[in-house]
Length: 158
Image 1 (cartoon, rainbow, N blue to C red):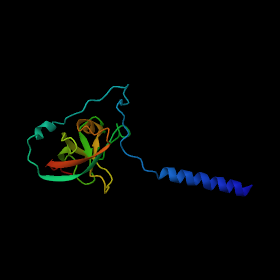
Image 2: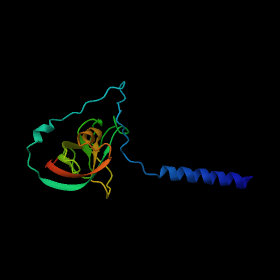
Image 3: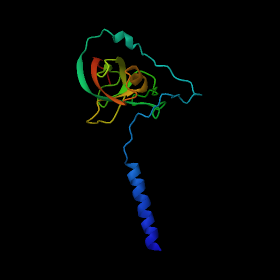
Image 4: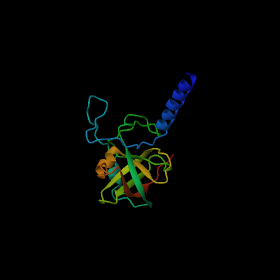
């Protein structure tokens, strides 16, 4: 009897550990997302980012972008703001907060100017995590990830 109970405990523990270690992408949105305020959709804030349309490019970086959405909507970002998944913001592992960048989707040449307001874990396969609003503007929601060019327009100050 003790042997069967011990076997069950080991089995349940193994299943729990394997489930907890599984990888889940940060993007979880579908096309019909609403925030937690009675189903009202939040509109994207532009943070006066249009002022940077003609700014000179300081630095250019190529890589893969992903996006994050409803799982983090309403949570506090690493710079202390409340994350608005419909805003034009992004998370980067090292860029200073409030860095302004232009993100260009290389598959369709769509671009968006965004502000860094959050951190993401360093990953060898991704260079940036974009807000859902940015992913919509770049038309990359269906793909989930896409090749991008980042053009730094203004470095933020930490």
